[in-house]
Length: 403
Image (cartoon, rainbow, N blue to C red; front, side, top):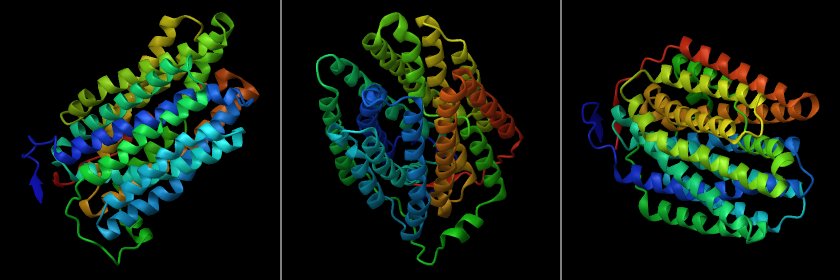
């Protein structure tokens, strides 16, 4: 069914709520493992390069399937089967409990992120189809908030268990929220009425996306070249704090700061989404990019002052709340209904390759040149991305959406 943009009161639909819960439990599971991954990696002698490679290669591997799966969901007119498989594979992060070398961590993370890649753009397409277009910001803001509540609970669980359980046993606990996500997909999600397009071809679908959308994707890609994995922020905090506090306490504080990051992300996501439904999404997104650039410069001068580190992690949470909601909401405004899957797949693929390059480049600069050079590179690239975004025309398509 199509809704006029004026019918915007019903935004918290069954699918929006179910997808929110899906994101909550999924992020609880994988953030539980992500929070302790830097500490676990150190036990194998891995540092910034290994962490950057794990994060970047995982994102690149996921990008290889994002585009095809999102196109395939448009072609068959179904989202739910792909979501079920994707969330099942992502839940396999708990098998990190059984590794004996850092390259095994890489393999498991890559496999899990392939599952994440398969379901991410498909979930976004389904979410955009489940609300009126005038409520895209609120729907994505709500999903981002639920996602981040999970991202708060995951590291909080890890932090509470770090001093009483071996790290390997903490990894096993992540299987619990993973199993819950599979149940939500099977029994909570409803398909939206889409017409199958059996003759659809991926490259022709990509070529059919508007020049306006591709210019938008290009701007997102420029920002992504500097938008490195957030685990590097935790590693930076731990490296700063260890000489003063010792390795164990520094690790606990680092995880605690990551929780602060996620608290701000969760608290700001829905208000930012609601704001985006009322103001210029493009300008708000450019502000988010600029905040990230300023945060990077702040990390160059960071020291063991916990107040300063807290401010920087607060900025990191604020910027991601803006970027996560606005990138996806703005994409929905620029995509026709019959190309939502392939469009979100293209956007996610560009983001993934940006994450790959940025994480590896920052890790190499950090290790081979200086920590400051890595952060200056990211600040410069992301501020250029903000300027590009402001220059792009993002006039929305007709404001209607299927539910």
